Image 1 (cartoon, helix red, strand yellow):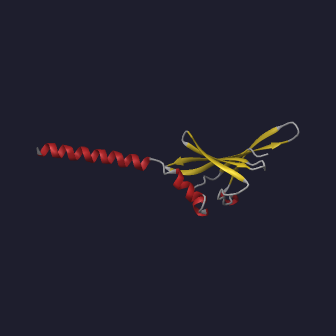
Image 2 (cartoon, helix red, strand yellow):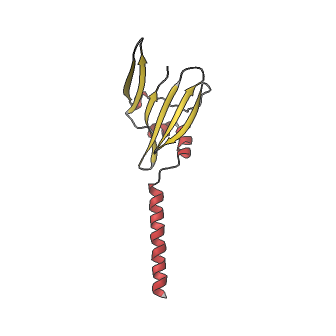
Length: 131
């Protein structure tokens, strides 16, 4: 009987260890992250991967040119993502969250891409298709 109790206790400990390990490797909750990211300028800087790739488009009479530049931390301005001149939409695409800002009658169309590193969310890329 004592061996059965010991075996049962070992099995419970193994299950708990596997559960705790899985929890520590799971990415943080995106909604909780987003609340901090949009309200805390220090947190936003810490959770933006610099240099940050920014893709945008230049237009002339006949051509559309795609340009990608890296933004350094020294050029980043805090964005709380709250503005009456556009709508925001968040969607999960595979392992990435994409936040899209669409302007209300102003031509804004910007997508922000968030991915995890070591279980934490970071802004990793921006695509600006505004016209």
